[in-house]
Image (cartoon, rainbow, N blue to C red; front, side, top):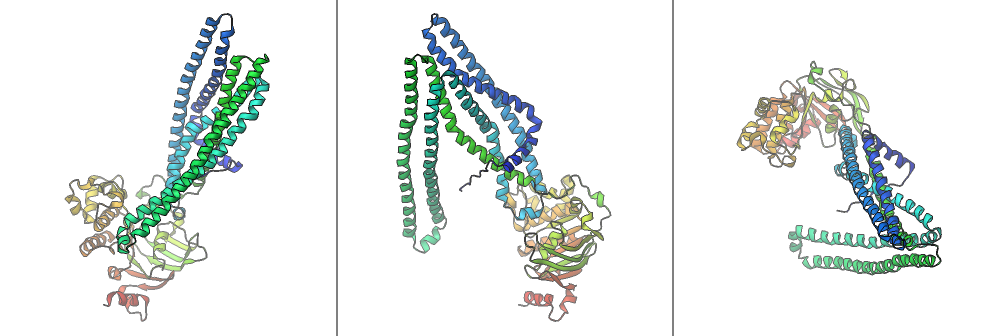
Length: 591
């Protein structure tokens, strides 16, 4: 899979957003500051090394050769020891600060993400959001631990090295700056040009692998249509393209190697040549030239690596910008610690009063129009109608995933907005048609309805949901792992686990989305029996696709094109001449 590298320009807005990361670093700013001091000391020690190497060379020209060599050697060993110690503490401090900061950032991002409204998730892909909390933060990890340190180190080496060189020999420094940086910059652009061919070759190899994958997965169709030679020709064409690109890239890589030999080594030879001339004129010492060449190599390498470091910082800024965009999204007003006792007198009455609704991203298309009906406490209300009539939207409004565009949604004759989202949703449970189970155990999935439930409560809920019998058949019983999305269980078993979860929650309002439509007869009987028991004493809103399941409903609300067309019991609606419900019944029950 091809991953797109995202970079951000060094704009004022981008930097402003990136500076918002400071609040996550702030608790550890002391450690970070000490780490920066160690980084500076390490870089300065790095700069001191070539100077003393040059003095070591010049020591042979002094009167006390042995004494000077020993003294300078001890200084060099001391610099190495200091650099090693400082580098160790710098790495440890930077890693500690980075890990603590990114842990806080991950927690903050996930906490914010999970509090965002459904409208946000409708507009984003799960893979994209997962990338923000994994790949983007991992990119920041690399930036804080390595890239930032490298950026500062290279700046110190470039400017510090040039300052030392100017002090040593301004004439040779100007000559070096006129030659080495130009060659390095040309090498950078040449290298980028060659990398394009490498990326092109990788893309073509991926395309050829796709041909192999598709043909092997669809081998039945390939052979059934006698297209073996067609696929062979496709693969041959693509692999030839890979070879051609590779050979073309090889020519440029060869040219790049020649350029490096001629340009980089030529530049060094030119600097040495100019330095030897200065030595002959008595304006430079041999050791100073030796140091000068090493410093020139340091500066050239730093200039060469600076482009990659800068590109890494740009990518990190891009990742930060996208993270900050998520963190700036407004969250739902959730209450952290909610208990059902706060709404102990909640009866579960639901009223739609002149309610209309359009989705925020499709404001020109009305989904619900002037909806009026009541679901009294303990009643079973069925929502029926053709696909797209607005049934699921009404359920989303009851769950307060959205707010009405106009009109009112009332609970116990109070406007929905007068309740906290968490306390209201705590009084509801949903058993969907397509049950989602988490990849843990059956126990964990049932207890999701009441995380602090006891073993006895979980077992009792499983019995009421007609799930305890099949749970006992598993060797690990409640501790049986259900697998990703519950794949280890059958459809009927998943439905009964979901019902047990709803039973354990003991809601006042129950929402059912035709929970038996995709089951075999035996599973449907068990699930329907569990649902019938679950609905007793609760306000139940049932989305019905098969009318046979709602004949006993206290009221059936018939929707068409976002409007309530009929309301009544099964018998009442059947008596309406040319009624929508009557026509639907005839279509389903007439064989």
